[in-house]
Length: 313
Image (cartoon, rainbow, N blue to C red; front, side, top):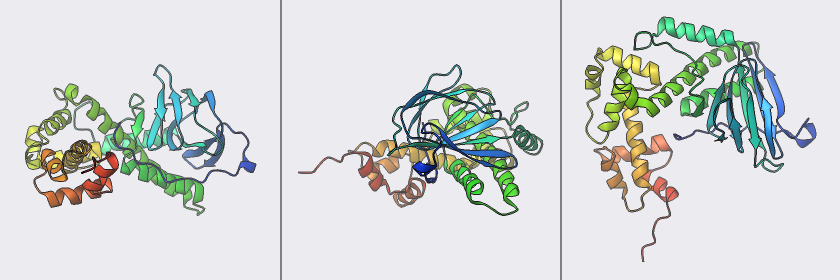
């Protein structure tokens, strides 16, 4: 799974206020959604949970093993989210939960009207690049790594739900929910193309562009020429690409080169300079600045954290 961005911590409840040690629930009701915080303080298996609406769940701490209908079980960890359709039963194991190390996650139940209104607005005003393709919340792309944008908007909704007390609370929540749904669909689109770009390259122009970028990532890529390869005007290509994925083509190329550089840096015998040029960068100073901005650490610091550097005698 891609790099995961964890959510801001939410204080756990005082033990004296708990109703149960397994999936103890705190609910915060808003106009178009319900924010639930679940905490589990002892190991358990096969706990069932379902909602009448679409629900976005996001892990805050601990570990779950999630079982969804007709899908193999999977580990569910902080920095990840799972989208579940209405009435689908989540069967959950808590193999490591204990009082000193509780499992905690949020479940945001979103009204069908809010989803329908947002999807309809996008389809009317920001049509997808391929004819017949539409915006939708995809229940087949359900297990997501939180990117920065998705984590930020989930954090904002948690703050509104738990701490906002103004008259405008529901208005703020509705605006944040609309952004959340856009970020969610963009995140699903990224994951879909990342996993299937070779299959999509023959039928979807963005699938072809993603394939081209990946196959030429270590070479010089003329971003302005990508629109020609997509058979689109430059303005339309850049606008639609950002609508689809949430970032520009140049941002995507940078992220891909940083991802490749991280792979090289995990090898202790590669220097920072070698990783820079092998990943397709042409300026070491720019690489170091971009890497620190994207990763939060310099390439050297990342390498020291990622591997045990061999001692020089």
